[in-house]
Every structure is written in structure tokens, then in C-alpha cells.
Image (tube, rainbow, N blue to C red; front, top):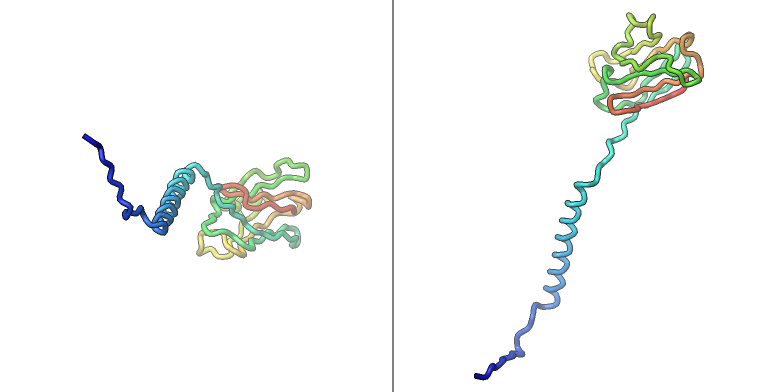
Amino acid sequence: MKCVRIVRKDERAVSPVIATILMVAITVVLAAVLYVMVSAFIVQPPPIVHLTVTVESRGTNWFVEVVAAPAGLLPEHTYLLIRDAGGATALPKTAWSTLTPADWDATKALYQDANPGAPEIQVLDSLLIDRDAYPGGYEIVISGDAGLLANRNL
């Protein structure tokens, strides 16, 4: 028996336009799958949060006023550390919520809430720091649970 091949010349493959569209679609799908797979390995750094403060001398104290504050920053999770000019700790890391008039003799620092009705630290809240206990050249470091918020020299 003879094997006969029938070749038909009137049949065509997929049109070039459809073939191009299919290739582009397959490429886009593969790129999307690759992106999803790789993005699982990329670690995003936490957002940087800053507290903006001004420092000025008023009478016998330093007045540290909040100029800009991120939302959700609470006094019990915000800390003040004061270092002397040599870098030694003059006031250990202390929560702002504990900087009260009752503790003034021990800390020589006071947190003043400009809006006691709001639990968050807001613009116009301030710290009052004794200039005799912490003279010029000392550094204040303000931090939160997530890290450094601000540091300034007195």
C-alpha cells in the first residue's frame, strides 16, 4: 500500500496579527507571574517617621516645641533621652507621659500637653527642660517604639 500525502495549499496558519497579539499576551502574563513570585522576596523598609521640634531658651529653661508630628504618636510611647556634650547619658530614656510636675525634681524635664483632650502628641505640645541641669551643648534624642524621631542640640 502506498502512503499518499495530501498537501492542501489553501489552508493557512493563524494570521500574523493574531499571532502577534498572542505573543504579547503570553509575555505580559509571564511577566506578571514573575513579578508576583519575586515581590514576595522583596522586604519593604518601615516608613520613616519624623517629629519636628524647635528648641529655644526661655528664662531658665529650654523650650522644645512640637512643630509637626505624625499621627498616632502617644506620650507613653515617645521617649526623651538627654546626653551631655561628651555623649554620656544625662537623662536616661524616659517616656514623655512620666515627665510630670511631680517628677520635675528627679528629671528636670516636663511634658506640656497643649490639647489635653487629645491623647496623641500634636503640634504645640512641648517639653520644658531645666537649663541649669542640661546646659547648652547637650543633645536631646526623641524616640518612639519604632526608632529615632528627632534629635537636637540644646
